[in-house]
Length: 151
Image 1 (tube, rainbow, N blue to C red):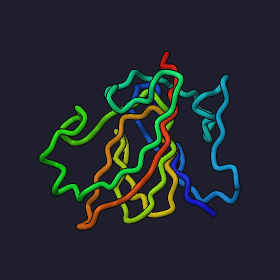
Image 2 (cartoon, one colour):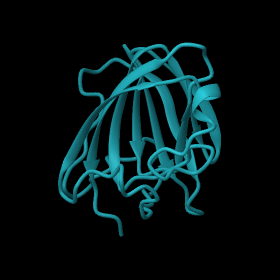
Image 3 (tube, rainbow, N blue to C red):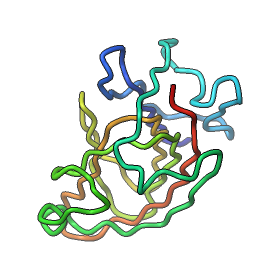
Image 4 (cartoon, rainbow, N blue to C red):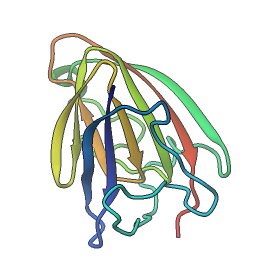
C-alpha cells in the first residue's frame, strides 16, 4: 500500500486535491501522449495553465530529476528562492512525481492543505502549490518533473 495524493486545477484555475488515498497497485500512476497528465481519478477534465516558475520547469519535451532537503519554514520564509512568491507558491508546466524520503512537509494548494510524510507520493499536475516544512528538522524528498505542453 502507498499513499497517493493527486492534484489538479479546477475550471476557475484554482488548484485542489483530486484524491488522497491508499493504493494497492504496483502501477501508481500512468499517463500517455494523448493524456499527458493522466486520467483524472474523479473523471473531471484536466485544465492546463501556464508556468509561474520557468526556472524550475524541465526543458520542453524533457524531464528533470531533483533531490532536495527543505529546511524548516521558519528559516525559509524570509528568503526568495527561484523567483517563487513570498509564501512559496508556484506552478510548473509539468507533471511531477514527488516522494518524501524523510521527515514531513505540508503541501499547500489554492484550495486545501495536507501533510505529506516519508513514503507518500504526490502526483503534482501543473498546479499552483507551495511546500512548508513546519517541523524543526529538514525534510528530504526527490521528484521527477516531466514537461507537458500547456494549452
